[in-house]
Amino acid sequence: MKLDEACETVGKRFFPRIRNPYGFLDTLPNWQPVFDAFPGQNAPGDLDGIMERHGQFLIIEKKSTGTPVKSWSGQARTLHAMHKLGVFTIIYMWGREDNPTDICVIKPNDRFNITSTPTTYDEFIAVLKAWWEFAESCKVY
View 1: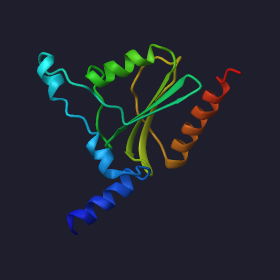
View 2: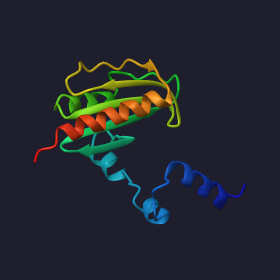
View 3: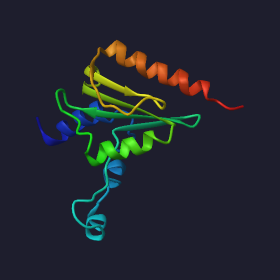
View 4: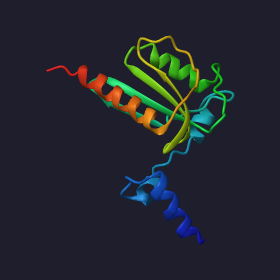
C-alpha cells in the first residue's frame, strides 16, 4: 500500500468527519514553547473525546485493551479535578470503538474510582444514550 492510500484509509477510519485533512494536520500543536517554559516533565495532556450538552460534559478516554490506568498519572489527576466540578461524566473505554472490551463510567456524583467492567458494543451505546438523556434533563428553558 502506498503512503497516500494508507493516509486515506487511516483518515476514513479515525477522522471520518474531518472535511479538510490538510487544515486539520496544520493545526496539530507544537508544544515546544510549553516544554521550554515549564520545568521538568510538565506537558499538556489530551482528551480523546469531549462533548457538552446543556452544561454537562462527557469525556471519553480510550485505552488499548488491557492497559492499566494509573490513578497518580497526570491525566488521571486532571480528570479527577474536572470530575470534582460536578458537571463531568468520564468514560474510560478499552478496546476498539466498534468492539470495546471494558468500560468504566464515572458520573458527576460518583466517587472517582477507575475500575473496568467487561462490556459489549451495545452496552457502550446504551451508556452513551443514557448520558445524552441525562444531559437533556439538565436543559434550562
